[in-house]
Image (cartoon, rainbow, N blue to C red):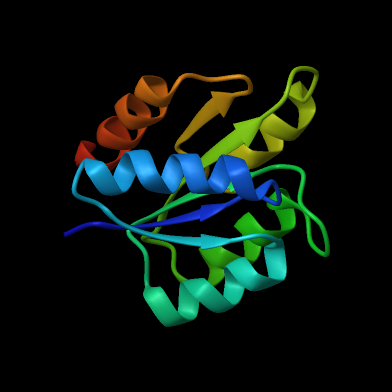
Length: 121
């Protein structure tokens, strides 16, 4: 079973993503800021991280950099809001595989997750 870590400071968003992906058979964990995400990566060893760009304590870009340094094999999907093009470019440089733009539909999240986890690159 593939493990996913969802990192978003908006608990209802994390809970909805977790609920929908758990229904699809994934083992889903949550964190609500960048520092907590780093701890969860060490404890859970996720196959995929869904990471919001805007987080308290440590933003998503900084967290992504540190996560990829500790485990380069973990895949990352970034959650972005409109107007974050520059940060999206940086996230690609730091190893993000895909993006999901807010607002999004639950089916969109599942499709992107399935695509990234099934990508053999």
